[in-house]
Every structure is written in C-alpha cells, then in structure tokens.
Length: 578
Image (cartoon, rainbow, N blue to C red; front, side):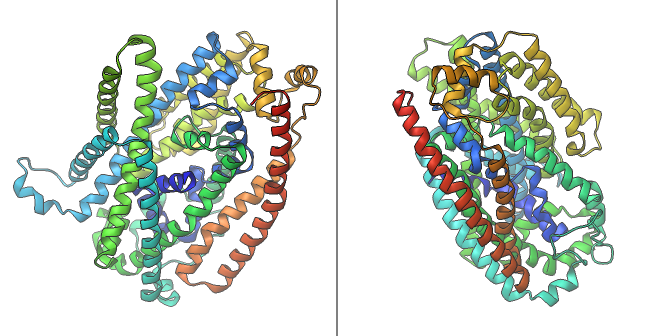
C-alpha cells in the first residue's frame, strides 16, 4: 500500500506533462533526463538507506535529527534549519504543481467558454494562472478535510485508474502509428537511448522550433549534461530523502527490511504503466501534432502536449478516467505537500515557541490558517514562474544542491555535528536562492558544484568551530543504525560497550548493488518505451537485462539483507535495545 501510494504521488500532472515534453523532443534519450531528480535515489534507498533510516526507530524527520545530534545547542540548530528547509521546499513544490495544473486544465476548459461570465479581460498568459488559483483553492479544502488514510486510499485508487489508462493509450498508439510512420516524423537517433558527445538530434527539417527549445534547455553537450546529473545524483541519493512525506512512508513501514522492499517496489510499480502512457501520448503527438506545431512556429507551449493529446486521442470514458486519475494525483501530492509544510510550522514553531498551552480546537484552527497561508504564498510565487521546467530545475539542482553536503556528512562522518549541519544547510539555501539572480541564463545543474562547495565549507567550518556531539548520542546512533563511513572513534567505544557488535563492512557490496540497481531501473523504463515504438530486438534485450539484474539483486541484496536483519534483531533483543 505504501509503495503504491508513493508511486502514485509521482504520477502527478506537472511531472507527467514535463516527461511527455521530454519524450517528444528527446525521444528515448529522455530516459536519462529524470536523473536530474534523480530517479535512481530509489535504488540507494532500496539497497541500504531505507534500512538505515528505519532503524533509527523514529516517527518524523525532525525527530530523526535528535537521534543524530541530540538536544544541545547544535541539535536545536539542526532542528531549526530542517524546519526552515522543509518550508522553502514545500513552497517550491507547490509552485511547481500550481503551474502544471493551470496549463493542464486550460486545454480542457477553453477560456472562450468562460470569458462571457468573467468580469475581467485576461491575456492568454494569465489564463492558466487563473485555472491554477481555482484548482489549488479546491485542493486546499481537501487538505483541511482529508486525513492520512484518505490520502493513501485515494492514491491506490488513482494509481489503478492511471495504470488502466496507460495500457489503453499504449494500445491506441501501437494501433495508429507503426515504426515506419514514426520514423518519418522524428530525426535520426530519436529512437535510441544511446548518445555521443553531442545530443545530435536535428529537428531543423521537421520542426525548427524544437532546435530553439533544445538550446534553451542547454542539453546540447549531452555527455557533459549526463555526467553532471550522475555526479549530482550520486551525492543527492547518498544524502537520503528530505524530511517530507517520502521519508514518512519509509518510517511508516513495520521493519527496516520492509522499508527497503517498499522503496524497491516503487520503481516496479511506477515505471512500466507510467511510461506506457508517456510514450503512447508522445508517439501520437509526434505524428498527429507536427503539422500544427510547425504552423504555430515559436508560439507553441510544448509542455501542453499531454493535455492536447488526451483531448485529441482519448475515447469517451477514457478521457474521464485519465482526468480523474491525474486530478486525484494532483490532489494527493498537493495535500501531502501542504500537510508537511503546515505540520512543521504549527508543531515545530508555533506550538513549541508561541502557543505551547493552546487548546485542541485552537490548534486545528491554527493548522487551517497556516495551510491557507502556505498555499497563498506558493501561488504568488507561481504567478511569476515561467514554466514547469524552470521551477523543477531550481528545485532539483539549486535547492537540493544546498541540501546535499550536510545530509551526506550526517550519515558518514562521526565528527559532523548540529552546528555544522545548520551552517552547511543555511549557506547552501542562501546561495540557492541568490544564484538564479547571479546566473539568470545558466542551467542550475551547471552551477551545482559551486553550491556544493560553499555548503561543504559551511559544514566543515561550523563543525570544527563547535564542540562534538555528545558521545552517548553518537554511540547509540551508531549501534542502532550501523552506517559505514568515517566512524572509527565511535565504533571503538561502541565495541567496548557491546563486544558482540558487528561492524558494517558492506560498502563495496552496497555500491555494486546500487550500480546493478540503476541498470535494472533503466531496463524497467526502456521496456514500455520499446513496446510503444514497436522495436522487437531492443525490447527482448531489455527484458533479458531486467531478468539478469533482478537475479543478481535477489542473491546479492535481498538474500543477504534477510541474513543481516536476522543478526541485527538478535543483537537488539539480546541487549534490549528495540
């Protein structure tokens, strides 16, 4: 249930619109671009990080900070910066969703139908923003009235609807477009995920506007772009999930082993049905929209390909299923994000410092008010954002760039303390907010190393300028979580206290499994792509790669994880540490 709910939250409107646009422009090479997020963070979670996180035995991300940094000044500083970061990221994600829902609904409810009843004349640029305000207002009431169980069950129902819709759309695309027809509408290399130093997709003779779009995206030097994504993605994945609802779903699992399996299940559950839909709409759009897009020149918004395709190719009934599914995904993701933001503001700020003795009724009203304010602020931000891609690029490269250094060090360096966490996160966040104004025409991914270095300096200086975390806190953390990394002084003290404690020597094994897992995940993505574009030999090859990597992960990860879990549970029960 949690895996389906997590996968369902990723099957959102804004993300799916963005990925249909990527597949339309970049073809099968779009496989790599979601590494910006990075999608393979689920592999790191599956292999070892979900186990580490669940072993902490806490209920929230903020509570986890206390298990690592304690309750002194450093721990309080770390706790404060996590709350601040969570609020900033919530505003960013809500703005991202605001833009997507507005553009999406503009296609299905033409403004010409509403304009006679609307007292103000709007420019075409303002129309999606009005739709965004309208639908986020509805979603805000859902946030205040719904609870955790309603969100999870809605996610499960929504994902079932989207899976059925994805299969049907893929069948329609296969029936309407054969490989020979598709080849006439796409440039050479569009139908392969492999690439050279440059992107080498020449749309000039087919759709010249896309060449400007590729230049605007700054993906031309594709090898450098992929290398930068991999560099950022590895560090970001090693940092673990942010303190949001993704982390909550890991912490909600019953055991560390189930947490790892839940994270692994997300890729299995999500990728095939989602990419059947994405490639189905992409293939239909490429063949049937190309003439219209050429006529429009530079006036077309390629991020609206998904709703245009739904409106054009879905049969009666199927359109309703897709709309209901995507809108429920928007509602669920929106609700989870707003709830995360208001929980931090209300529980960790207002009730802790301003209204510590307030009544239950007052707390509920306060949560309503904060939810409304969070949505209002994110909506104002969204009014000034150009498109989905721009805000997504800022979130995954700039904002997350300031998050990475501190959150990698917290797992792997014993001396790292709450003060270092605070100054590393703060310096990274400040640079992330300022950088777009300093480098307005630069892809955030390309100045990510600057963010990382500045944040790392803040981490190290803040750590060395303050006292280490309390030894007992560190020993308890090490014994419970068992991380690998630079923990030798703490490990030696832990061995004195628990002579039968086993050191974690699985770094090489974990990294090997991560590499195999990324190949496994890529195969899961390519299989539905090859099904829709009807390439038999690459499809068979991808299935064989999937089978081989699944077998390796089963023997080298799952079987050994069961052995590790058994030894860990015996140790914890023996010393009454559960």
